[in-house]
Structure formats: structure tokens, C-alpha cells
Image 1 (cartoon, helix red, strand yellow):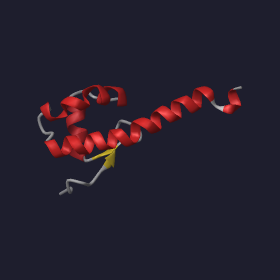
Image 2 (cartoon, one colour):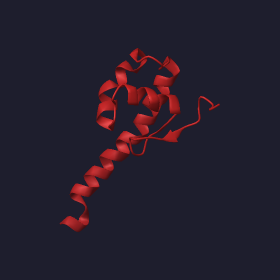
Image 3 (cartoon, one colour):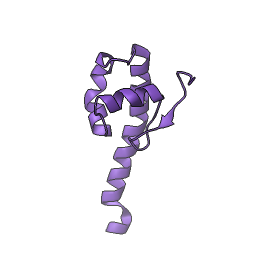
Image 4 (tube, helix red, strand yellow):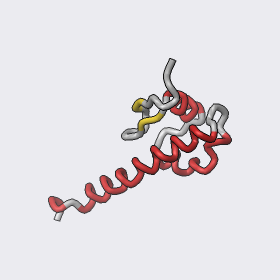
Length: 82
């Protein structure tokens, strides 16, 4: 049986969450970082997401979102594109 803190990769690249979180996000049709960010303030309203699980998801999102923004801006404005 998975431990609450065990995480794994899922359909959102770079994000590692507990399997139950991935199941709930799949059920809620949340498939991108943008969709997850747009719903981050109401995660506790999803059946199966406890207050603690919502915190875990938000923390993971906080780590991944700045990296994604940096990667996107590097792709657009990298020195090789000048």
C-alpha cells in the first residue's frame, strides 16, 4: 500500500504527486500546469483531496511552475536565437 508521501510522475511533465492525487486530477480532467494552477485554490473541494493533500499539491506546483516559466523564456529568448 503506498505511503501518503510516496510520489510518482504523472501526465503533467515535471510534477511528482502521490498516486491518489493523480487519480483525482484525472477524474477532474486537470491535465496541464495551467489547469492545475487555475484550480489550486479549490483543491479541497475535490472528492478525495484532504487539506494536507491539497498542501502537497500546491507545494509541488510551486516548485514546478517557476521552472516551467524559466524554461519557456529560455526557449524564446535563448542566446542562440539572437
